[in-house]
Image (tube, rainbow, N blue to C red):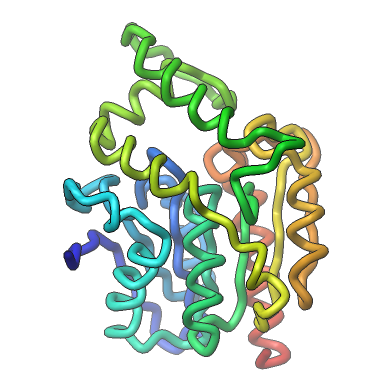
Length: 259
C-alpha cells in the first residue's frame, strides 16, 4: 500500500543544489536539523524524510512496505513533486540502504550520492552484521527504561538509547524495518551507480566497521572515501558540524563544475 511519508521541505530561492536526507534506523528527520539549518543558511534547499514506521510517518502491518524497493518508491513519489535542482541524496546507515537503492532505481534523479556510516549488504560472514542487528534489537527490548541523563556524546551500543528509539518508533515499525533491512544486498548493482558518490565513515564505528566503507567505495566507480578519526556510528548527531562541512564541499563542487 502507498504510505504518505512525513517530510520537511525548506526551499531556498536560487539554490544551486538540493539536499535530500534519509535518516538511520530508529531515527527521524529531526536528526538532521543542525545540518539542515546550516545548509539552508548557506543557500541550499533541503528535503528531510521520516521513513516508513519512523517519526510521524505511519506504520503498516505489511512487511512488503518496509523493503528498500518499496521505501524508495515512496520517497521518489514525494521528491518528484518538487522538481528539485541538482538533487544530492544523503543517507545514514539504514537510510544509506535506501539511498543506494534510490540511485540504482532512479539514476537520472540523483546528481550526487552521499553515504554515511552505511554498507552495501548486511549478511557478511566476516563481520556478521545480521547478528549485530539482531543483538541490538533483542538487547534493547530486554532493557528497562531508566531516567534519562544528558549525554554530549552518544555511544554506538547505548542500550537505553536503543530502547527509547524502539519505543519512539514503535516496536512494530522498528521490527518491520529491521526485518526488511536484513535482506538488503546492493552488490549486484554497485558497479552501475553512475553519479559521483561520497562515502563518509567514522573510524571508530563499531556497528558497521569502516573496512566495509572501504569496500563500498572500491565497488562504486565514481566514488571517494572520507574516514573521520574519532567518530563512531552516530556521527550525524555527535559531529553535525563535520558532516555539514563535508556536505557544503559537495554542494560547492556542483556549483563550481555543474556536475
